[in-house]
Image (tube, rainbow, N blue to C red; front, side, top):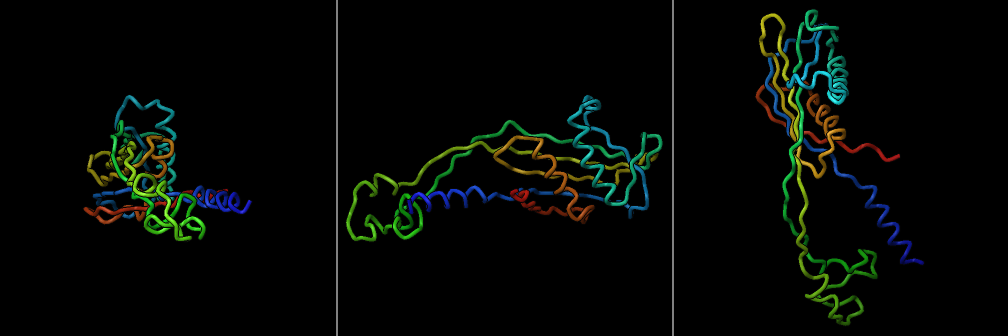
Length: 211
């Protein structure tokens, strides 16, 4: 019973751990301080103008711009700024990696005192060839898929066409789920917005709190 309880506790601890979302953000800008300028958001690819997916992501950007002090306009004719938005994720690539063997660190059940062993010996001092160089000792080779995603945002002044902002947020993840990636990329883009022109920063976004 004690062994089962310890294993369950370890699994619960691992499931509670989550990796923060990490993004690289580059921005170039000469935006004037916000003073109620109005904006519209348009897709970089005009074929997405009627896309419900684009509309959802544009809504996230709209909320961020409003929080910055800009005002949404009903049409481009009445807007001060045009915000061009693009996003995507590639097909992924396979990556090969290794995990070290556990000899000298832990036995198969983890660091609770009754599992660890050193070299090929248990704490009790006897040798078990099952756990030696042919078992848990060897590095494990494994493969996984890595996806590169991005969010690009450009802000142009209507009338003159002057470019006021160019930003790009990129991330490398194990998932290609845009519904999860784009909100994080938007948040990364607007971290310390509009940022220092010509600077590339790394942004870490903590995972959502567990309920």
